[in-house]
Image (cartoon, rainbow, N blue to C red; front, side, top):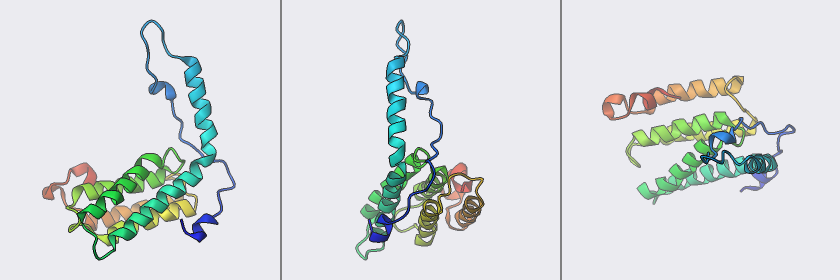
Length: 181
């Protein structure tokens, strides 16, 4: 983590976490039902962790930026893409939980792109950079959802970039991934 990242100001407001219905993940035991006390403890634990979400999100973004820089090294090979893909995938899965669903959408688009191209030869670093820079901007500007004008502009621009850089469905990519931003 760089010095300027350490001094980045946390948002002055509470982190907004998408509603999670823990009951959807709980196991129903026939004859016993749900353990309501366990559900309550889990909900309290989740609430206690919310204060750390901003820092965790920053950590995930820092990891993504670090792994992207490793791709620029002269010795970068297909193996260098594994940690980068994992960092992108982690962010895709965790961003909404940390209160940044727009960053998750952007990371999802990046992962879909990497799934569609042959690594490392087929990847466009310009496309990767656009996504990383967008995720960094989302965090820096505290953009939380797609109704934000910054989010709408970023998502539109990334959608246009996807049209330029992504393989067409005829190249083996599925239609859904090739058209999403």
